[in-house]
Each structure stands twice: as structure tokens, then as C-alpha cells.
Image (cartoon, rainbow, N blue to C red; front, side, top):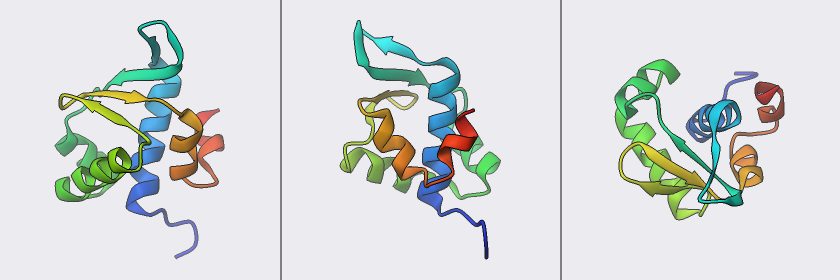
Length: 97
């Protein structure tokens, strides 16, 4: 069980990598990162080894916790990248390098 990530860490880590690789400041607000998911939630679930329902629940939890804001099904705003990294777990910095 060593090294196993929770569903929240998997989804958050995936989003953190995507935002790090290609996000743009949203509307000139340098503290808000925006991204358009390159995959559907179903494809993301397959890639992460999770179910579609689990990925959807994690998106809802991240939204409820204020870590992300959803604009439609594929557009995501991340007002606090540090909160996303924290949700991804302690190894998230390594994944972002």
C-alpha cells in the first residue's frame, strides 16, 4: 500500500500537471489559472485507473472546497494553485517539475 494515492490525489495531481504545462492567466488575473481539459472525464478516469463516477465526485468535492471552479464540462478555473497542489498530496511538487 506504500505509495498509493487517493482518488483526490490522483485527480488533483492530474489537474496540477495540466495547469502547469499549459494554463494561461484568466482574463488578466495573474492569480487565476484556467485550463480546458484535453480529455473527457471518462478518458481521464481510464487514464487514472478510476471510475467515471469517482472522477465526477472528486470534481464536485474540489469545487465544493473552493479548489476549482467549473465553467462547463471541460473548462476549469484554479484560483489557488497552492490549494490544488495540497489536494494532490505531498509529492505533487515532484510531478510538476
